[in-house]
View (tube, rainbow, N blue to C red):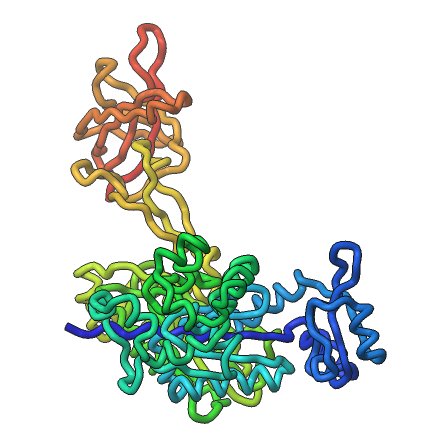
Length: 536
């Protein structure tokens, strides 16, 4: 049985996010002491400082008056937490170049689940170095750490050496299985001498993301480091400081799972291609896309699915944090997993790509996929996806829909109603069709309907019999054969219709019609007849 890939979390901390953002807008202030201030409890307090201010002895939390006393040349600006939160959201979106699983983590951090992604960038250390270098070039100071759990990565990024990658296990490179961890005793798991404990034990208890009151309470009894907690029985810690302490401790050491919710839904299928050298030509971009489509469709084949919505992201070497990647999106009316068919749809849009100085990363995602029926899978292996060498109608709809716009091409989809004119509805070419047959399988239906049904003059020998003759648009039709009636009524909750008795009739010229009499027979009242469709 294939072993599951160990989880790896990268924690990104931006300790000077407010002042870095201000320095990007005002480069002339970047190298001078700078602080963000906010009114709290009737006084102006410092909430963030840049590196020059920190080197002058200033720190967040002090009053503005004290800060100016230490550094008279201090420049200040009003903090804007909402603007900082929007910026952090953009940075989290920018980080999707490394993994689709990103989310803002508090007011100044981003968590990235990089499980199975690091090898695309040369390993974890190379990924961390690349991310740090790009943020530094953009004007953001950062600290990063990688660990098996979000809590451990968070703690190491903020309280240990910067840019630290935590191995999965001491000396081995793979962590113990959950079964092995379950057999270990609490003391060994918390203080057994493995690499995680060696790095976490010296950290202050504040690294466990505990409330300030709990941190102060632990310090009051001499428990200042995470390692100090190992010597205390768990029951004693819980009784004295509450269950939150044990929960945070267990999250840090991986005994309690801590899920990450991505900022956007993660596509069920996604592949990415990090290019050794940026590409600029249309031919190179098309070739890279073919490779991505081949890999993606191979994954879809393993799951028995086909793609319905695909999105291609192209990341340029000159992309800034404010810039979204270039995107191309296509859709299909039914699940498809043939690389050549999907490439033809993308080919209609590749001329929109502006590579600039070069594209260095391409990400292809199937945002929506569906099961591929056996008939589709059989056609999927053909050269053209059709029968008798003719292009499949569905592929033609896909090409028109992607070229003209999804809502510019319509198709009919079933709708729950027995009345023929209400049993279908127009829908965009790529819309999901509800289940169910378009017509009842056991009753013939005409190939063409009139909308709305047109009135006719009809004559029947007795009220409940089919007509023997009818006149439509000035032409008279004598009936040679007739079959029926088939009674159709509107849904019980609708009060706008009467029952209809439908007949299939054939005139002397061999033309076949679908006619109906509306309403029940009422003595002395002429029946109302309508022509609704044509057979053949």
